[in-house]
Image (cartoon, rainbow, N blue to C red; front, top):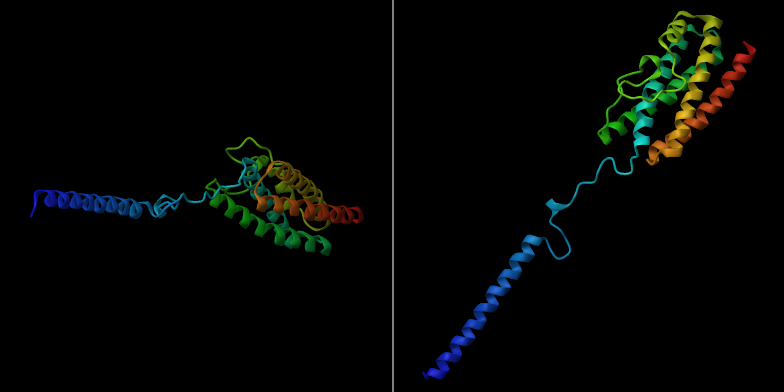
Length: 209
């Protein structure tokens, strides 16, 4: 074989080898990339559970839980102490509406990774927070309600619950003004509508007692 022909074959072999190496390198990059424009699954960020949640939403839930818990407690007392059947029925409606809302708000706070209140604090303040909760009963108020029966209970229950509802409406309107979470805002709107209607009913009952 001539020297010229051998040299030509050597050049062709080198080109072929370079092509194979280049293709192998491209193939390796493709497999580790997970595909063009598609990041590997392990690199995909997890959706944040608190996306779309404003501090106002957290405050609303943390304050409204013990507020509702106190209303439920007041309504439970009516079962054995109220004399007026309409007061008893109203207390049942309050308990039926607010207990599920407590569970919903507890679920939100858990999903958001935020502290869940353990119960209704005395004096109307949530432990660890500087925000007051309007309408909350004091320990003295609760003791008076627990010690009352019959018509005395009815009048005291209605008077305290009207103030309690007014406080809840104030907090709900604050959530509507500042909050971002769709579920919290929807609940706030429901609280405003439902509890205002109950306030109107309680005032009518109180006027005839």
